[in-house]
Length: 396
Image (cartoon, rainbow, N blue to C red; front, top):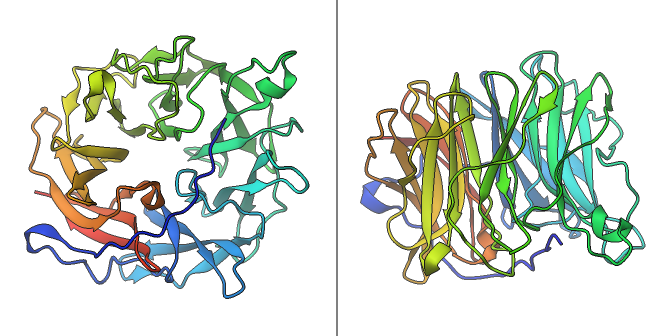
């Protein structure tokens, strides 16, 4: 089942390697104690969201929009005492076609020790007001739902969402059902039917989704009966979903969830999947690129520097390059590193954006394209109290 991680407080100082200071115009407008950043970009709009607690300890999903002048004043999408402040299951505020916004987050269900519900709301006025929160999942089982990715439609202001869903265990006769992967689409003002994509997946590794040339692509950590936990991808076209396709036969077998989901980025017919594996007792971050919309992938390229924590995210530049951000262990800390894989397979040197903790308190960094050779990176700076940071990075 999905794990809710206890947030640890670990002292860590921020540092940038190679004389690259934080870009003052790029730094996040998040308060002390903020966590779980998520960058989303659609068209020319970039949104950074994060979790922040008020003086009374109530968590909120906060966000800010970015333009050429910098960040807007932070706004609140939802303030909810039951909101789950989980760095591994980060909520998001995502820009939609037509100028709207959609938000997704997870709450603890009232009166249940186990249930976590995925909630979604939409704003059509820049975040000033939001629709009544609804669930994309239709079951009422006391199980966990989360690790979601919200994917805007190309036009019309709709979106799809994929998530991990634990209902099968509650609905099976002896509790033998596994965590599954689901999809639903929002059109107009409501969700359509749920679609079951995969009946057995890794319990607490985040999902990833991007729009391919023929429809959505979803990447996730799969799981078979022998507890092999490698990365798979599924694609939708013409209203029909493909069968799961393995990205690479890593052969990583373990009985517990590694809490290290994949990332996917697309541009035209190209799609790139980045992921962490610990197969053969050797930690590594890999990226594999497809030139046919995710139907097949080329040979994977190793991205890390030899001691990765993982927790990858990815973005694709207009020239077909893939940019990957991940955490790399450095002594007692972890560096937030960015590296570009060019369309011809050439790797540029990694750029160290900042430092954080390798613990689960630091969660996943996030990334969005800013220009031809510039990306925006956000991460959780751990410490006391720590906060969400961001920086614009010019790539080699």
